Image (cartoon, helix red, strand yellow):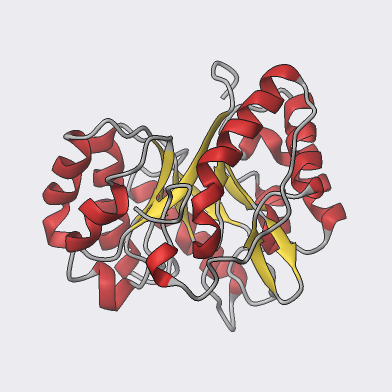
Length: 267
């Protein structure tokens, strides 16, 4: 990653093909493309129509920094199917980084880890798949497992409430983090707009000379400010500050007609 600069984008996704135009017509910033998230209900009906998805994005001037795969179980044989098709999408769109979720396992965690690694190797997905950080003792890979085993990681700052752990991960593992999901934690919820701790982590990444994908992942009622926050972070990294952080604004909470990426919340 040393030959490229930090690239900043926002997570934008879809669940059905008929949502593509509505969700992406106003996008004029780099994105992490989130594929349909519910494996059985949303991904399976679409996976044989991958060419339509690829054609849609090839016809538009949208820079795709990374993909976020469906939330299938990476410990099961079905991963070999949906994982290969996700890699197919990535390669057809020229994307090098794909985030996958570590599902929970109740027993034989070490054996499950090795099985996941074998399947990733068999799909030629090493260096492309990165495993997202989650808390909880039953996840097949904990953040500490990823660091100890030297595996590619998508560091989600808001998923780890132990700030010292986030700092340690960046310090020890930054060269194996192709993507960072950046958002803040509030009372009872996460994926809030960037706060002071997020900026602290950005500063740490810059000092480490990290280069990768910095993806803003906000709750839907904060999507309207993603564009401005990307610009503010780009200016901050380029100039060294100061960065003006607006407080989280819940004015669109519960108003689905305003869950969009334009400044007024529409698409």
